[in-house]
Structure formats: structure tokens, C-alpha cells
Amino acid sequence: MEAVKLPSSWEKPKLAPQPEASIPRLELCTAVLAVELADLVHQELDMEVDTTFYTDSKVVLGYIHNEVRHFYVYVANRVQRIRRTSKPQQWHYVPTDLNPADCGTRSVPAIRLHDAPWLNGPAFLSRPSTPDDGNQTYHLIDPDQDTEIRQVVSTFTTHTSSSCLNSERFERFSSWIAVTRAVAHLIHIARTFNKRNTINKACNGWHCCRTLTVEVLNQAKNIVVKAAQRYDYATEINCLEESKKLPSDSAIKTLDPFIDEQGLHRVGGRTRRAGLSQEEMHPIIISGKHHVATLLVRHHHQSIHHQGRHLTEGAVRAAGFWIVGGKRCVSRVIHFCVRCKRLRGSVQVQKLSNLPEDRMDFSPPFTNVSMDVFGPWPVTSR
Ligand SMILES: [Zn+2]
Ligand SMILES: [Zn+2]
Image 1 (tube, rainbow, N blue to C red):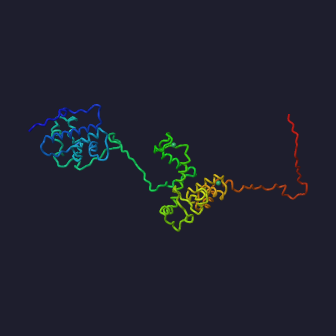
Image 2: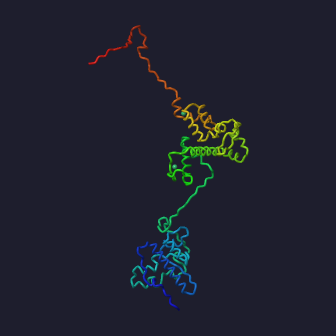
Image 3: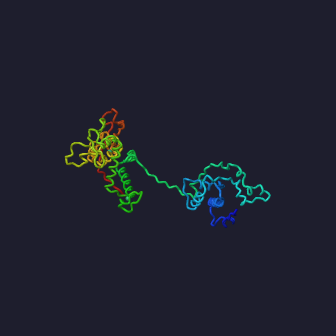
């Protein structure tokens, strides 16, 4: 039988390379060495031999059994080498106190060498089962802290079920200007992420521009109104989109509503040939119960300097909005308006004190005499 000639590097003691590698790296190198040695033995033996590998490093076992994470190059190359000619199921754990390899690096008195596993191997080798019962799968140990393991980078996408914003979020705003500006900022930021739409090069990513264009503000206004309409009149809008009749119990059936080219829900009617602007002929429909209606009424009530109910209604109407239940909405806004309460409040009346005693006593004439004297008084000063 021809003697197996081991490579010259294996005949020498293996020393840890410089600069010093980490313990898991050294353990992994020994695992690679074991696989290369097993390959050489298989190559020289003309028979099938089942090979079992043992290591006392659970970190290395975690690397070899890993199926979920990626490693950096050093560990990845060695794990790839190990798995090329061995399967993870062939790798098992041996406790440190049973590991015969440790006898070579830790001193064993000569008198105990005969009983040490160095010469005969550990006792479990002669049993059919392995110390870890054979079928154990090893997981990575503390993968988030291990510098050899690449960090998991997750990319998320958000899918919304509706093409509109959630109008319940508008309840966080107390003014129409604030809600439209907030949505306009979002539109502007969304555009800056698309480099083709970026007008100003200073606009980049999440930022807050001081100047917003009229076009963006108008677009924001339409988005807010559309979201409010979808919230209150989803059924009616679906019917109009599918060219169906509106439900008989719909609150806006009498308004003959239609959807314009921007997707806004407007009042219909017979005045299309009147030559008026679209805002006047076909105002936008908004439910008076929605928070956006309250914001709109409050905004126009302030713009006409807190005048009464009729003028506020007129201002809202002139701005191109038809608020369903508008009278009640306007009354509610004015009722809670602090400035109107202050200006329209009744004047406080002073409570007068009791009359003096000499005016209340019955007495003969000239009993109490007083003189009303008025100047000019000459004043001298020294
Ligand atoms: Zn900007
Ligand atoms: Zn007011």
C-alpha cells in the first residue's frame, strides 16, 4: 500500500498567522484544514468512507449550518470551501473537556497520557451516537453583533388601498391654510425625489421650502378636497364613475352632482350656459359634517373679518364650495369663534351702590346745604 504523502505544510505545527486573527476565524481555518485533510484521505482510499467532523466552536458550527445570512469575504470563502466537500449534517459539536485536540495545546502529565483521549480518542467515538445526538442544527450566535456577518438591509414599500390621503388625518389641523401647506410640502418633497421634476437644485430629499408655488398649493387644495369627498360620498362617487344612478337616499341626489376632469365632485344644474366661472356655476360639494368643511368656513369667516352668518355663507359660496348642511356648519363655527364671542357679547352693566343716607332722610328744607362751585381758581406758587 502506498503511503499517503501529506503536504509539507501539514507536517509542521500550525501557528496562528500574524496579524493575529480572531478566535472564530482561527477555528474556521482549522475546520477548512480538517475538510482538506478528509478530502486527501478520501482521494487516497479506494472506498466510500462516511466522515464526521467535530469542532468545539459553536460559532463555526453556526457559520457552516447558516442558510439565512451573508458573510463578509473571509468567512464566506472558507464556509464555501467547507461546504463544497462536506455537508452541514456531517459537522457536530464536541465539548471542550472531551476534545482530544486540546491535549496537544494544554499540558497533560506523562503519567496521565495513557488515559487521556490524545491516543485513543474520546469515548463517544466508539458509540453510535454523537455527543449532540446527531441531528442538531446550529444557529448563528448573536448575528447582529458578529462583525463577520453582513447586516441585513431591508427595503420596504408601502401600498395604500386608496388613491387619496386618509382624510381623518386632517383633524390634526386647525386651519385651512395649514392643511393645504402641509400637503403642498409633501407634493414638493415627492417631486424632488424624482430628479427630472426638480426645478431648484437646492431642493433635495426631505426638506421644508419657504416658497411654494401657486400650482402646488392648488394641487394640494384639490387633494384635500378630494380626500374629504371620498370619505363622505364614496358610494355616490363610485356610482358616478360607473355611470349608475345615485342611491335614492343620497343626501346630494338633488344637487345633480358630476365629476370634473380633475376628479372633483361638483354641483350640476342647468346653468352651464350662463357664462359664469366654473366655481360659480358648479361649486365643489363638501359635507358640512367633515372637518375640512369646518376649516373652510373658519378660513372664509376670518377672511371677511368675522361678519355674520349670511356673509360667511356667501364668502364660502363665492370661493366655489357648496357645503351640504352649510347653515348649521357656519352657525357652529361662529358659535365657537372666540373673537365673535368677544365682539358680539352683551355689555357688562355696573351694579350701583346704595344712595347716601342724607338723600334718603326726611328732613326740613335747608337742613343739608351744598354748593356747586367752579373756577377759575388763581394759583400762586413761590
Ligand atoms: Zn424645496
Ligand atoms: Zn368670528
